[in-house]
Image (cartoon, rainbow, N blue to C red; front, side, top):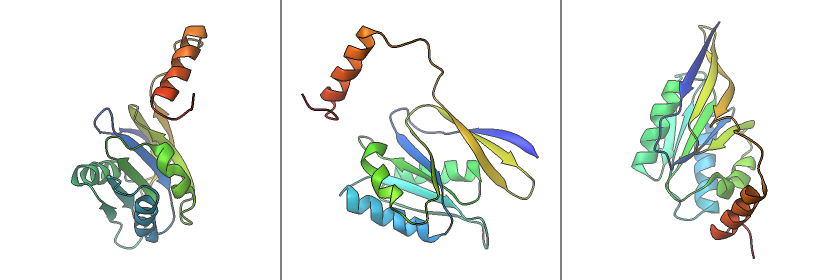
Length: 162
């Protein structure tokens, strides 16, 4: 077995969601869940098929996001994983509830805009995702100034009232 890391390639501001699922029906079900929960959403989705033709299956509403999804899914190459890229201005918090209701999804592994590396095991027969490194390690403990900034920021972007 070989351990590998694959860095997610994307523009800095773009969010993505990585997960594990179990059936090619996921491609259409995620598409339907996204457009039903956020009308007009821009996204690209790719799914690594783990049997049969073993293709990267894909869908989406935005050519740039579709291309990112296809490229990153092929690089990861782990069976039955999916990667979803959300267009600028769309966030995981807006779609995670809908994704959690897709019956084929087994696990959401990561949702982030941070620089992210996927840790993989390659057995020669296939690949599996062992985990992710999401962003940087902490530099310290939040103080009063940090608390004030966090609370202000969440209200500024509309995720908290008052």
